[in-house]
Length: 266
Image 1 (tube, rainbow, N blue to C red):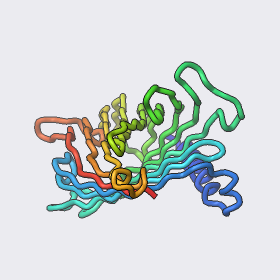
Image 2 (cartoon, rainbow, N blue to C red):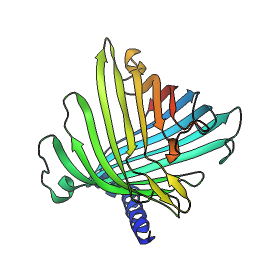
Image 3 (cartoon, helix red, strand yellow):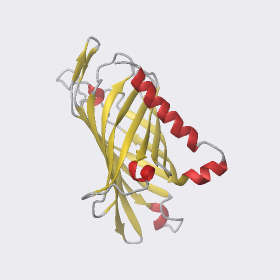
Image 4 (cartoon, rainbow, N blue to C red):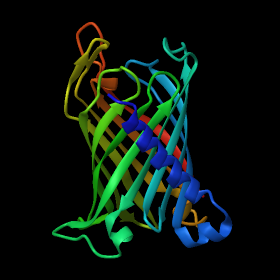
């Protein structure tokens, strides 16, 4: 694959980030809303990597004049033994800017449940050989009961010669709130479904599915500390053929586990 395409995506990502990081006057004109959080996770029975892990996650989401952005960075501590590839800790993150056709052209792109059409991009980065660029169409959907529901279709482009080039990934993202007495339960998360296999001289990248919801209780609201500020709960993590590595009797790459969770919003 030519490096022109991933460089174009990277340039677009940098441009969006630069605009959002501009001075206060510019930010006031561009930025419409934002949300930040820190999450602590502890869990066992992970596949491929060491089975016991503690993860500290920073998340940022915002809406701006021409679209929206989402960023997360995981810093994971491996308990018991180091990972064979990255050592005693791992770092992984994704930056996903989306450009809204409705916002850019100042008109509605609505039909049926679709409330907006977007150009979605993702940059995957971290410790080890994980860098990839993704691009494709995105859709904001209006589904009864959901706080929001996004559906993105990405074509994957790993950096370098790793397999997995030009395979398609379907990524729904959702949030659903259930009122309970004196508080709320929030169920949100995403699914990354890579639907294709790819093989080259470097190896084979297998189709895989990563389902990663969180089920959280708004403890801050229950304790009159303020709603949507302090959550406790669990994160469920199912990943078949993790990292695109085919599951076999000799090497189990199907992950099925849950982690305890504490999340602070700010």
